[in-house]
Amino acid sequence: MTASDDTPSDLLYLAKARYIDANSLAITDTHLAVTPGPQGDITFVDTIPAGADRIDCAGRFVTHAFAVGHHHVYSALARGMPPPSAPPTTFIEILERIWWNLDKKLDADMIRASALAAGLDAAKSGTTLIIDHHASPNAVEGSLAIIAEALESLGLSHVLCYELSDRDGPESRDAGLRESARHLESHQGLVGLHASFTVSDELLDRASALAAEHDTGVHVHVAEAQSDQQHCQASHACRCVERFARAGVLDNPRTILAHCIHLDDTERDLIAASNAWVAHQVESNLNNAVGVPSARGLEHRVFLGTDGMNGDCLASARAACLAAQSTDAPNPLAVYRRLRRVHEYLSTNGFKGDAPNNLVVLDYDPPTPVTASNWPAHIVYALNRSYIHTVISDGRVIVADRRSSLVDENEIMALAREQATRLWSLL
Image (cartoon, rainbow, N blue to C red):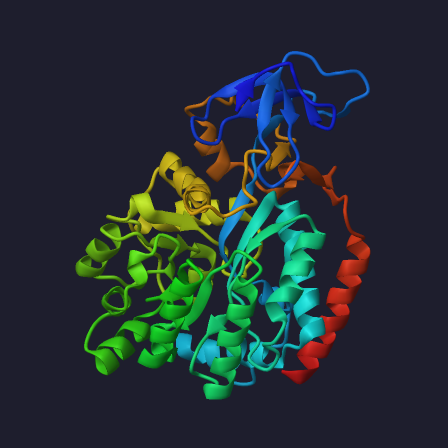
């Protein structure tokens, strides 16, 4: 970001902004010139050209938009769905009776409706990029293209993967590998794996090879529940992180290890010394009663996701702060760094869609001062999605005055309800 008045006429201007630098937390009262495009920037300017495209921020706070570090947009139609006939009592039963039952019922229309509804929710929460982990075992082919198109129609960037697993047999596994390869030929993305306990050595090797072929990383659930570790020890004579380390998964700087709740010290040391990153999503962990993750020893590698609960990064940050008081007891600044560390992951690995021209305008007028030192406390104790007024993605306004500026929200919600009804009838 530079200071200049020599700006092209196609810029978007944010007048009278209180800009908060997402890294330094410095607050600057300024006009902003926003360059469009996937590699656009922002510039402080003293004057705005007459007739230029502008938004009057009227002293509102402006800062970098958010990114979800681990999502499942296919779960968007689950809200309020009928419960299973036999209530689950373990995490494995939650998967078998709820999520694996749901993902098998998805078809192309349901996948599209899910992506549109989840993407709209994320955009209105100030999110402009989603790292997603998709599963639809009976509708694999073309599923990632459907999600990509839906998210892009909302103005969102994405890093997608298909969840590879042996749980549904070799035909489904191979379809997932083909879908992953097809997507990576034309899009940035990752190679998805479910979790150690549903991934054979053969599949792990094939997934690792596919990631190497496309110069990307693996996105995998790790030790979300104790059962994952127990299975790994019984089947592979090691713990989950050790297994993935032996396969070379941790060597790749694009690799994401989701959850990482039940780790021992050896596993923490392996991750800390590796190139891999860790995504925490506390709301989901609390919902599934699997425990609360700790960033102990991993602070420099942890960022936040939502795990399909929503697209709201601010809610994820608050949950992470409150729940983790029982584990590593982070202060607001530590949680804020976790909220923002996904941007480091994206930039250092060359992913597009998270340039400085991704911004949120916050209609936030607190009863206490906002300073560089206390902004993280405002984030975790006060801010929520209701304060998101305007969202700018790749330099383009995608949410204006709390409504999408690119799509008909009523049409998307009607479509989602229609497809949710179809899905629920099959559960």
